[in-house]
Amino acid sequence: MEALGYLYERYVELIYGVCLKYLQSEAEAEDAVMQIFEELIDKCRRAEIHTFRPWLYSVAKNHCLMALRKASRQVLNTSDPALVQSGALWHPDMENADEIALHLLRQCLERLPLQQKQCIDLFYLQGYSYKSIATMQGEDVGTVRSHIQNGRRNLRKCMNRQNHNNDE
Image (cartoon, rainbow, N blue to C red):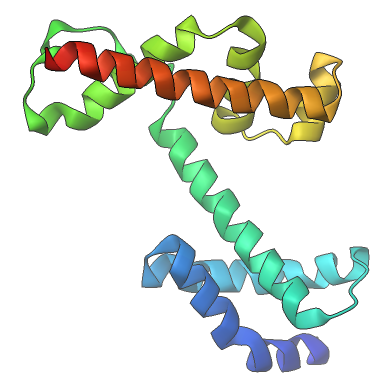
């Protein structure tokens, strides 16, 4: 605990800066700093640390990215009843821009090939790692990465087509 206190004093500003950069909120950054330092004891025991500062930076960055991913999963929950198809969503009213984008995303997700759709869902919406998805799907990690990359590309193309069709 004494060592943790020393590390906290020495690196709290670095970690706070990293968290603030990613989370864009002072309150969320402060909470994240506390969570990171709470987890640090266990992580230090399990990890093979050669240089502490870059390792700690990576831990903080990954913590923030996971928090952002978790928050985006809550926003993009495709089972949300608010995402049910509705004619009102197609009205070009800018107040409905987020709803329109989510509706388009859901439509385009449904059009993806099955492996891409499953991998996108497991990775982005459910938060599984490449390795976990590969194990569940019975595929290698490279194949899962390829499905996710191709799925993202196909989603982007589909959404661009949909946006273009709606503008006409």
